[in-house]
Image 1 (tube, helix red, strand yellow):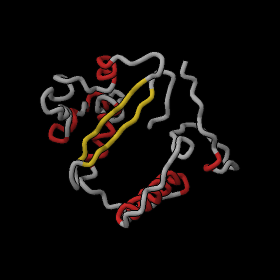
Image 2 (cartoon, helix red, strand yellow; image 1 turned 60 degrees about the horizontal axis):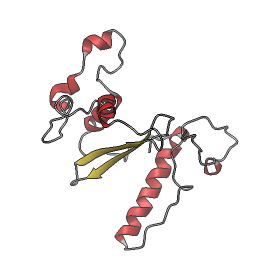
Image 3 (tube, helix red, strand yellow; image 1 turned 180 degrees about the vertical axis):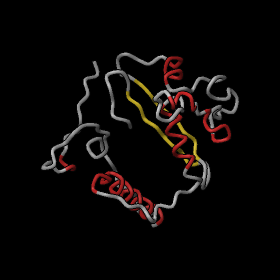
Image 4 (cartoon, one colour; image 1 turned 30 degrees about the horizontal axis):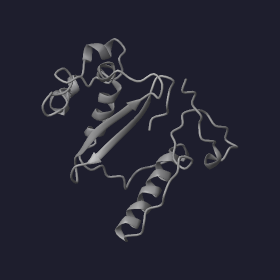
Length: 166
């Protein structure tokens, strides 16, 4: 879940299809305002027939056409030249290849969330392999957060964010 805003809540899901492919889903909502599907698809550059094939839902901008990267836009200051944050994310993920070798990662203290996530996922995978019931998480255990926290605050003690949904 991406940290919520007063405009929307957003969950991204990457669901494995096989050992090297996954399906990418977005779920967006707002409890009181709602979200227009057409406006949301346009915002995410995911309009069928424009950004994605209306039958297969495969991306129009993809590795075969270099994500339609606009070099002229880059010269004018657009850092990536790739339209839309979701497409920029996908270009980064896909450019790593089907299986990224993480054995030589050089994680630092600012990468704490990455190694805590990996530790949790590895424990879950081991539990699944041994048929141990997975640990149950509640809303306090898992939440997304964006902001600055003082160095003297333990990250596990950061309070769950309360977002004004009005």
